[in-house]
Image: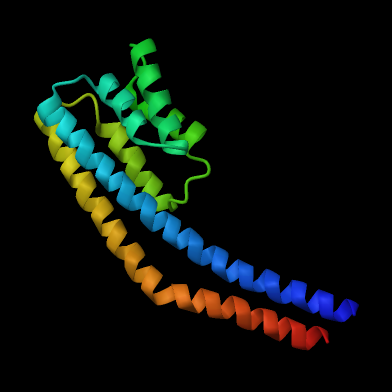
Amino acid sequence: MLKIIGSVCVLFGCSALGFYFVSQMKKRLQELSFLRKLLFFMEGEIRHGLKSLPEIMIAMKQKCSGEWALFFQIVGRRMLEERNEPLAVIWKNAMLEALQVSSLSREQKKEWEELGNNLGYLDREMQLVLLQISQEHFGDFIEEERERYKKHARLYQTLGVMSGIFLVVILI
């Protein structure tokens, strides 16, 4: 009886691990699409809204939830409070505080950090160009993640189930 319960637990655990990896890939893809939409919103706010960058960050908080709402809240609040601290430092500190649970890859987080390093001290037109370049980069990330998802999603699920079966056979 214990062997059966243990076998079911091993099979379920390995299968769940495969499905977890697929859900992380899907979450990353959704997060990248969301960030790209936020970049379009930021571009529109800068181009037509004629708001200051701290006001835009506070407005971005309203469009988000979870860690991204916290990120934009931190950035907007610190930009209003601390006039002497550069946006790059505020941006990086907010990333360290709020985006620990983000599913973005290291490269994608680096690109987001680069946006913060270059945003804010340039004139309006250069900020718009920078946002367009970031949109293109995040579009490339989205395409890469879609390809990776198509290639690996079924593989991870199958591998999780098959490794569970393999371990059950070896343990019994």
